[in-house]
Length: 84
Image (cartoon, rainbow, N blue to C red; front, top):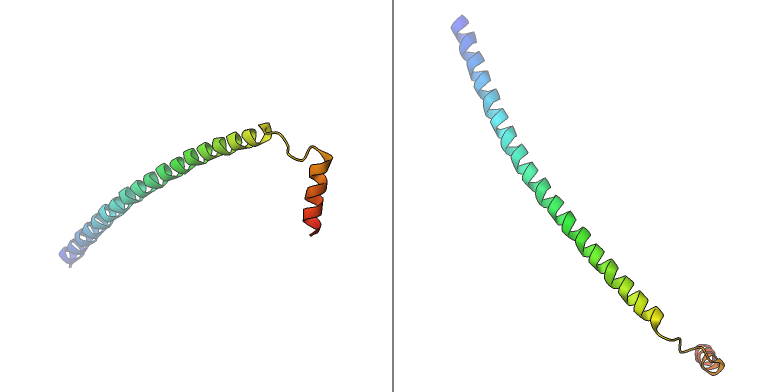
C-alpha cells in the first residue's frame, strides 16, 4: 500500500515539474512579446516626436508669411464670396 502512495507521489511530483517547465516556457515567450511591444511603442513615440517637430515647422512657416487679407479691399472680396 505504501509503495502505491509513494509511486503516486513521485508521479505527482513529475507532473508538477512538467507544469513548472511549461509555465517557465510561457513566461519566457510572454517576456519576448512584452519586449517587442515595448520596442514598438518606443518607435511610435519617436515618430510622434518627429511629426510634432514637422507640424511646428509648418506652423512657423505659415505664421511667417504675410496675410493676404490686410487690405480692406481684400476683406470685402472675401465677405462677398462668403455671402454668395
